[in-house]
Length: 387
Image (tube, rainbow, N blue to C red; front, side, top):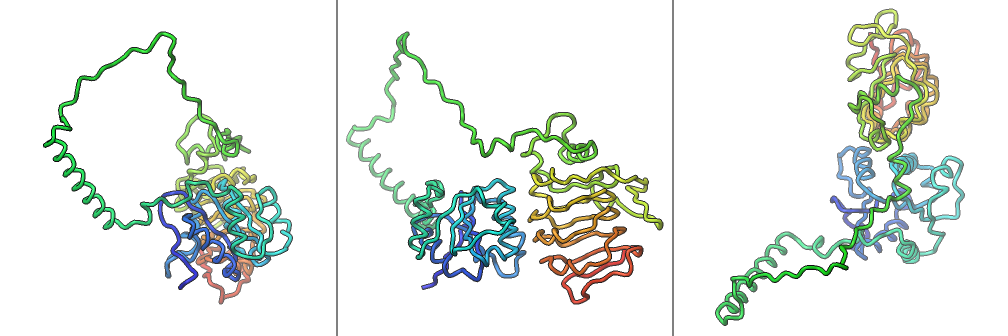
Protein backbone atom coordinates (compact mmCIF):
# COMPACT_ATOMS: atom_id res chain seq x y z
CA UNK A 1 0.00 0.00 0.00
CA UNK A 2 1.38 3.42 -0.96
CA UNK A 3 2.27 5.80 1.86
CA UNK A 4 1.23 8.71 -0.34
CA UNK A 5 -2.37 9.91 -0.60
CA UNK A 6 -4.18 12.14 -3.05
CA UNK A 7 -3.81 15.81 -2.07
CA UNK A 8 -6.99 17.80 -1.66
CA UNK A 9 -8.23 19.76 -4.69
CA UNK A 10 -11.28 21.90 -4.09
CA UNK A 11 -12.68 25.12 -2.72
CA UNK A 12 -13.17 24.15 0.93
CA UNK A 13 -10.65 25.06 3.68
CA UNK A 14 -7.46 23.01 3.50
CA UNK A 15 -3.92 22.93 4.88
CA UNK A 16 -0.86 23.67 2.75
CA UNK A 17 2.07 21.45 3.80
CA UNK A 18 5.58 22.90 3.37
CA UNK A 19 8.62 20.67 3.89
CA UNK A 20 12.01 19.64 2.50
CA UNK A 21 11.66 16.81 0.00
CA UNK A 22 14.70 15.00 1.31
CA UNK A 23 12.82 14.47 4.57
CA UNK A 24 9.55 13.41 3.02
CA UNK A 25 9.49 10.10 4.93
CA UNK A 26 8.85 11.71 8.33
CA UNK A 27 6.50 14.30 6.88
CA UNK A 28 4.34 11.92 4.81
CA UNK A 29 3.92 9.52 7.73
CA UNK A 30 2.70 12.42 9.88
CA UNK A 31 0.28 14.06 7.46
CA UNK A 32 -1.06 10.68 6.30
CA UNK A 33 -2.39 10.18 9.84
CA UNK A 34 -4.13 13.56 9.64
CA UNK A 35 -5.51 12.61 6.23
CA UNK A 36 -6.85 9.30 7.55
CA UNK A 37 -8.56 11.20 10.36
CA UNK A 38 -10.46 13.15 7.73
CA UNK A 39 -8.55 16.41 7.33
CA UNK A 40 -8.03 18.15 3.98
CA UNK A 41 -4.35 18.64 3.12
CA UNK A 42 -2.41 19.63 0.02
CA UNK A 43 1.26 18.84 -0.54
CA UNK A 44 3.31 18.99 -3.71
CA UNK A 45 2.93 15.34 -4.62
CA UNK A 46 -0.28 16.59 -6.20
CA UNK A 47 1.43 18.58 -8.98
CA UNK A 48 0.91 16.87 -12.36
CA UNK A 49 4.00 16.05 -14.42
CA UNK A 50 4.82 18.73 -16.99
CA UNK A 51 2.84 21.48 -15.26
CA UNK A 52 4.15 24.91 -14.20
CA UNK A 53 5.58 23.98 -10.80
CA UNK A 54 6.02 27.49 -9.25
CA UNK A 55 2.62 28.65 -10.49
CA UNK A 56 0.97 25.52 -9.08
CA UNK A 57 2.63 26.07 -5.70
CA UNK A 58 1.61 29.74 -5.74
CA UNK A 59 -2.01 28.93 -6.61
CA UNK A 60 -2.40 26.49 -3.71
CA UNK A 61 -0.65 28.86 -1.31
CA UNK A 62 -3.09 31.58 -2.37
CA UNK A 63 -6.14 29.31 -1.94
CA UNK A 64 -5.20 27.70 1.37
CA UNK A 65 -6.13 29.16 4.75
CA UNK A 66 -3.38 27.68 6.92
CA UNK A 67 0.15 26.32 6.49
CA UNK A 68 1.82 23.40 8.22
CA UNK A 69 5.61 23.89 8.08
CA UNK A 70 8.00 21.08 9.01
CA UNK A 71 11.17 22.69 10.34
CA UNK A 72 14.53 21.03 9.74
CA UNK A 73 18.02 22.00 8.66
CA UNK A 74 17.31 20.90 5.11
CA UNK A 75 14.10 22.91 5.05
CA UNK A 76 16.02 26.02 6.13
CA UNK A 77 18.53 25.38 3.34
CA UNK A 78 15.77 25.03 0.75
CA UNK A 79 15.06 28.16 -1.27
CA UNK A 80 11.64 26.76 -2.18
CA UNK A 81 10.69 26.36 1.48
CA UNK A 82 11.87 29.87 2.27
CA UNK A 83 9.88 31.34 -0.63
CA UNK A 84 6.77 29.42 0.42
CA UNK A 85 7.01 30.57 4.03
CA UNK A 86 7.82 34.16 3.15
CA UNK A 87 4.80 34.25 0.85
CA UNK A 88 2.61 32.68 3.55
CA UNK A 89 3.66 35.38 6.02
CA UNK A 90 2.99 38.16 3.52
CA UNK A 91 -0.42 36.75 2.66
CA UNK A 92 -1.32 36.61 6.34
CA UNK A 93 -1.71 32.82 6.50
CA UNK A 94 -1.84 31.10 9.89
CA UNK A 95 1.29 28.95 10.29
CA UNK A 96 2.09 26.06 12.62
CA UNK A 97 5.77 25.04 12.86
CA UNK A 98 6.46 21.34 13.47
CA UNK A 99 10.03 20.60 14.56
CA UNK A 100 11.64 17.56 12.93
CA UNK A 101 15.15 18.19 14.27
CA UNK A 102 16.87 19.91 17.16
CA UNK A 103 18.04 22.78 14.99
CA UNK A 104 18.18 26.52 15.57
CA UNK A 105 16.70 28.85 12.92
CA UNK A 106 19.17 31.33 11.46
CA UNK A 107 18.52 35.06 11.35
CA UNK A 108 16.37 35.18 8.23
CA UNK A 109 14.24 32.23 9.35
CA UNK A 110 13.96 33.62 12.87
CA UNK A 111 12.48 36.77 11.37
CA UNK A 112 9.79 34.70 9.63
CA UNK A 113 8.74 32.23 12.33
CA UNK A 114 9.74 33.76 15.66
CA UNK A 115 6.11 34.48 16.61
CA UNK A 116 4.54 31.29 15.18
CA UNK A 117 3.20 28.45 17.38
CA UNK A 118 5.57 25.46 17.49
CA UNK A 119 5.05 21.73 17.94
CA UNK A 120 8.11 20.53 19.92
CA UNK A 121 10.51 17.84 18.76
CA UNK A 122 8.87 14.40 19.03
CA UNK A 123 10.10 10.92 18.12
CA UNK A 124 7.33 9.39 16.03
CA UNK A 125 4.84 10.42 13.36
CA UNK A 126 1.97 9.36 15.65
CA UNK A 127 3.19 11.69 18.40
CA UNK A 128 3.60 14.57 15.95
CA UNK A 129 0.11 14.04 14.50
CA UNK A 130 -1.44 13.90 17.99
CA UNK A 131 0.38 17.09 18.97
CA UNK A 132 -0.91 18.89 15.86
CA UNK A 133 -4.47 17.79 16.64
CA UNK A 134 -4.14 18.84 20.28
CA UNK A 135 -2.73 22.24 19.32
CA UNK A 136 -6.13 23.49 18.15
CA UNK A 137 -4.62 24.47 14.79
CA UNK A 138 -7.12 22.32 12.86
CA UNK A 139 -10.67 23.63 13.35
CA UNK A 140 -13.59 21.43 12.45
CA UNK A 141 -14.09 23.19 9.10
CA UNK A 142 -10.88 21.54 7.82
CA UNK A 143 -12.45 18.11 8.30
CA UNK A 144 -13.99 16.35 5.31
CA UNK A 145 -17.76 15.95 5.41
CA UNK A 146 -19.35 12.56 4.83
CA UNK A 147 -20.51 13.57 1.36
CA UNK A 148 -16.99 14.57 0.20
CA UNK A 149 -15.94 10.94 0.09
CA UNK A 150 -19.01 9.75 -1.79
CA UNK A 151 -19.09 9.58 -5.59
CA UNK A 152 -21.75 11.38 -7.65
CA UNK A 153 -23.06 8.01 -8.83
CA UNK A 154 -23.60 6.86 -5.28
CA UNK A 155 -25.29 10.15 -4.39
CA UNK A 156 -27.62 9.79 -7.37
CA UNK A 157 -28.60 6.27 -6.39
CA UNK A 158 -29.20 7.35 -2.79
CA UNK A 159 -31.33 10.32 -3.89
CA UNK A 160 -33.39 8.06 -6.17
CA UNK A 161 -33.96 5.59 -3.34
CA UNK A 162 -35.01 8.34 -0.91
CA UNK A 163 -37.39 9.80 -3.49
CA UNK A 164 -38.96 6.35 -4.05
CA UNK A 165 -39.39 5.74 -0.30
CA UNK A 166 -40.82 9.23 0.29
CA UNK A 167 -43.28 8.84 -2.60
CA UNK A 168 -44.42 5.45 -1.36
CA UNK A 169 -44.90 6.80 2.16
CA UNK A 170 -46.87 9.84 0.94
CA UNK A 171 -49.20 7.68 -1.15
CA UNK A 172 -49.82 5.38 1.80
CA UNK A 173 -50.60 8.29 4.14
CA UNK A 174 -52.92 9.86 1.57
CA UNK A 175 -54.82 6.59 1.13
CA UNK A 176 -55.24 6.14 4.89
CA UNK A 177 -56.39 9.72 5.42
CA UNK A 178 -53.49 10.50 7.76
CA UNK A 179 -52.18 13.21 5.46
CA UNK A 180 -54.25 16.08 4.11
CA UNK A 181 -52.46 18.04 1.35
CA UNK A 182 -54.65 21.13 2.08
CA UNK A 183 -53.01 22.96 4.98
CA UNK A 184 -55.04 24.11 7.96
CA UNK A 185 -55.39 27.86 8.47
CA UNK A 186 -52.43 29.28 10.30
CA UNK A 187 -53.15 30.50 13.82
CA UNK A 188 -51.07 33.48 14.82
CA UNK A 189 -50.57 34.91 18.26
CA UNK A 190 -49.36 38.41 19.04
CA UNK A 191 -46.38 38.75 21.30
CA UNK A 192 -47.12 40.23 24.70
CA UNK A 193 -46.03 43.83 25.20
CA UNK A 194 -43.09 42.92 27.43
CA UNK A 195 -41.61 40.55 24.83
CA UNK A 196 -38.62 41.70 22.81
CA UNK A 197 -36.92 40.48 19.65
CA UNK A 198 -33.34 39.30 20.33
CA UNK A 199 -30.71 41.56 18.80
CA UNK A 200 -27.98 39.88 16.75
CA UNK A 201 -24.54 40.68 18.13
CA UNK A 202 -22.19 42.53 15.75
CA UNK A 203 -19.55 40.37 14.07
CA UNK A 204 -16.22 40.10 15.86
CA UNK A 205 -13.25 41.27 13.79
CA UNK A 206 -10.13 39.17 14.17
CA UNK A 207 -7.35 41.55 15.20
CA UNK A 208 -4.94 39.55 13.07
CA UNK A 209 -6.96 40.55 9.99
CA UNK A 210 -7.64 44.14 11.05
CA UNK A 211 -4.39 45.46 9.56
CA UNK A 212 -5.70 44.63 6.09
CA UNK A 213 -8.29 47.40 6.53
CA UNK A 214 -5.81 50.13 7.51
CA UNK A 215 -5.43 52.95 5.00
CA UNK A 216 -2.03 53.08 3.29
CA UNK A 217 0.29 56.05 3.46
CA UNK A 218 2.46 56.43 0.36
CA UNK A 219 6.18 57.33 0.35
CA UNK A 220 5.71 59.78 -2.53
CA UNK A 221 3.06 61.18 -4.87
CA UNK A 222 4.28 59.19 -7.87
CA UNK A 223 3.77 55.87 -6.10
CA UNK A 224 0.34 56.98 -4.93
CA UNK A 225 -0.67 57.97 -8.49
CA UNK A 226 0.53 54.63 -9.82
CA UNK A 227 -1.46 52.60 -7.31
CA UNK A 228 -4.56 54.75 -7.80
CA UNK A 229 -4.35 54.29 -11.55
CA UNK A 230 -3.93 50.52 -11.25
CA UNK A 231 -6.90 50.25 -8.89
CA UNK A 232 -9.06 52.87 -10.59
CA UNK A 233 -9.49 54.78 -7.31
CA UNK A 234 -9.41 58.58 -7.69
CA UNK A 235 -9.50 60.24 -4.27
CA UNK A 236 -10.66 57.80 -1.61
CA UNK A 237 -8.37 56.12 0.87
CA UNK A 238 -6.59 52.99 -0.34
CA UNK A 239 -6.40 49.97 1.96
CA UNK A 240 -4.03 47.02 2.08
CA UNK A 241 -6.69 44.57 0.94
CA UNK A 242 -7.15 46.70 -2.19
CA UNK A 243 -3.42 46.75 -2.87
CA UNK A 244 -3.44 42.96 -2.83
CA UNK A 245 -5.74 43.01 -5.88
CA UNK A 246 -3.12 44.55 -8.18
CA UNK A 247 -1.60 42.12 -10.69
CA UNK A 248 0.30 44.69 -12.81
CA UNK A 249 2.06 47.93 -11.87
CA UNK A 250 4.28 49.96 -14.22
CA UNK A 251 6.33 52.96 -13.01
CA UNK A 252 8.27 54.54 -15.88
CA UNK A 253 10.23 57.63 -14.87
CA UNK A 254 7.82 60.27 -13.61
CA UNK A 255 4.91 58.61 -15.39
CA UNK A 256 2.71 55.56 -14.89
CA UNK A 257 1.82 53.45 -17.92
CA UNK A 258 -0.41 50.49 -18.67
CA UNK A 259 2.36 48.14 -19.77
CA UNK A 260 6.04 47.68 -20.52
CA UNK A 261 5.31 47.60 -24.24
CA UNK A 262 4.70 51.37 -24.08
CA UNK A 263 8.29 52.01 -22.93
CA UNK A 264 11.31 52.53 -25.19
CA UNK A 265 14.80 54.02 -25.09
CA UNK A 266 16.42 56.22 -27.74
CA UNK A 267 20.04 55.89 -28.94
CA UNK A 268 21.22 58.06 -26.04
CA UNK A 269 19.50 55.91 -23.43
CA UNK A 270 16.72 58.41 -22.73
CA UNK A 271 13.48 56.78 -21.61
CA UNK A 272 10.26 57.39 -23.52
CA UNK A 273 6.67 56.38 -22.84
CA UNK A 274 4.50 56.32 -25.96
CA UNK A 275 7.15 58.49 -27.62
CA UNK A 276 7.21 61.18 -24.91
CA UNK A 277 10.46 61.56 -23.00
CA UNK A 278 10.28 61.11 -19.24
CA UNK A 279 12.60 62.17 -16.42
CA UNK A 280 13.94 60.08 -13.55
CA UNK A 281 11.19 59.03 -11.18
CA UNK A 282 10.92 59.12 -7.40
CA UNK A 283 10.17 55.49 -6.57
CA UNK A 284 12.88 54.27 -4.20
CA UNK A 285 11.07 52.88 -1.15
CA UNK A 286 9.53 49.57 -2.24
CA UNK A 287 8.23 48.52 1.20
CA UNK A 288 4.70 49.37 0.10
CA UNK A 289 4.84 46.55 -2.47
CA UNK A 290 5.13 43.92 0.24
CA UNK A 291 1.33 44.07 0.50
CA UNK A 292 0.94 43.55 -3.27
CA UNK A 293 1.49 39.81 -2.96
CA UNK A 294 -0.31 38.96 -6.22
CA UNK A 295 1.78 41.00 -8.64
CA UNK A 296 2.48 39.21 -11.93
CA UNK A 297 4.17 42.07 -13.83
CA UNK A 298 6.12 44.96 -12.33
CA UNK A 299 8.04 47.80 -14.01
CA UNK A 300 10.45 50.02 -12.08
CA UNK A 301 11.90 51.88 -15.07
CA UNK A 302 14.20 54.89 -14.54
CA UNK A 303 13.83 54.91 -10.76
CA UNK A 304 16.40 55.65 -8.01
CA UNK A 305 15.98 52.20 -6.49
CA UNK A 306 17.36 51.18 -3.14
CA UNK A 307 16.94 47.69 -1.76
CA UNK A 308 14.96 45.21 -3.86
CA UNK A 309 14.29 42.88 -0.93
CA UNK A 310 10.67 44.11 -0.43
CA UNK A 311 9.69 42.49 -3.74
CA UNK A 312 11.61 39.27 -3.19
CA UNK A 313 9.40 36.31 -2.42
CA UNK A 314 6.53 37.43 -4.69
CA UNK A 315 5.75 33.94 -5.95
CA UNK A 316 3.46 35.09 -8.78
CA UNK A 317 5.80 37.68 -10.33
CA UNK A 318 6.72 36.54 -13.84
CA UNK A 319 8.08 39.68 -15.52
CA UNK A 320 10.17 42.44 -13.95
CA UNK A 321 11.69 45.51 -15.61
CA UNK A 322 14.47 47.50 -13.93
CA UNK A 323 15.55 49.22 -17.15
CA UNK A 324 17.23 52.60 -16.70
CA UNK A 325 17.21 52.35 -12.90
CA UNK A 326 20.11 52.71 -10.48
CA UNK A 327 19.97 49.10 -9.34
CA UNK A 328 23.26 47.59 -8.15
CA UNK A 329 22.44 44.31 -6.45
CA UNK A 330 19.88 41.87 -7.85
CA UNK A 331 20.84 38.85 -5.74
CA UNK A 332 17.68 39.02 -3.62
CA UNK A 333 15.55 38.49 -6.73
CA UNK A 334 16.48 34.79 -6.75
CA UNK A 335 13.64 34.46 -4.23
CA UNK A 336 11.17 35.08 -7.07
CA UNK A 337 10.37 31.46 -8.02
CA UNK A 338 8.11 32.34 -10.99
CA UNK A 339 10.30 35.05 -12.55
CA UNK A 340 10.77 34.27 -16.25
CA UNK A 341 11.64 37.62 -17.89
CA UNK A 342 14.01 40.25 -16.47
CA UNK A 343 14.66 43.59 -18.26
CA UNK A 344 18.00 45.19 -17.34
CA UNK A 345 18.67 47.62 -20.23
CA UNK A 346 20.68 50.75 -19.37
CA UNK A 347 21.51 49.69 -15.82
CA UNK A 348 25.01 49.79 -14.24
CA UNK A 349 25.10 45.99 -13.99
CA UNK A 350 27.96 44.18 -15.74
CA UNK A 351 28.10 40.80 -13.98
CA UNK A 352 25.06 38.57 -14.54
CA UNK A 353 26.54 35.44 -13.00
CA UNK A 354 24.23 35.71 -9.96
CA UNK A 355 21.27 35.07 -12.29
CA UNK A 356 22.28 31.41 -12.51
CA UNK A 357 20.61 30.93 -9.10
CA UNK A 358 17.23 32.07 -10.42
CA UNK A 359 15.14 28.88 -10.69
CA UNK A 360 12.88 29.66 -13.69
CA UNK A 361 14.49 32.65 -15.40
CA UNK A 362 14.27 32.26 -19.19
CA UNK A 363 15.07 35.66 -20.74
CA UNK A 364 17.27 38.63 -19.75
CA UNK A 365 17.31 41.76 -21.91
CA UNK A 366 20.33 44.09 -21.92
CA UNK A 367 21.57 47.10 -23.93
CA UNK A 368 24.83 47.87 -25.76
CA UNK A 369 26.00 50.40 -23.18
CA UNK A 370 26.24 47.52 -20.68
CA UNK A 371 28.84 45.60 -22.73
CA UNK A 372 30.99 43.71 -21.97
CA UNK A 373 28.92 41.42 -19.72
CA UNK A 374 29.84 38.38 -17.68
CA UNK A 375 27.58 35.35 -17.39
CA UNK A 376 27.66 31.61 -17.88
CA UNK A 377 26.44 30.90 -21.42
CA UNK A 378 25.39 27.42 -20.22
CA UNK A 379 22.93 28.84 -17.73
CA UNK A 380 19.23 28.20 -18.19
CA UNK A 381 18.45 31.70 -19.46
CA UNK A 382 19.32 33.51 -22.68
CA UNK A 383 20.60 37.07 -22.91
CA UNK A 384 19.01 39.27 -25.59
CA UNK A 385 20.63 42.49 -26.77
CA UNK A 386 17.97 45.16 -27.28
CA UNK A 387 18.77 47.96 -29.73
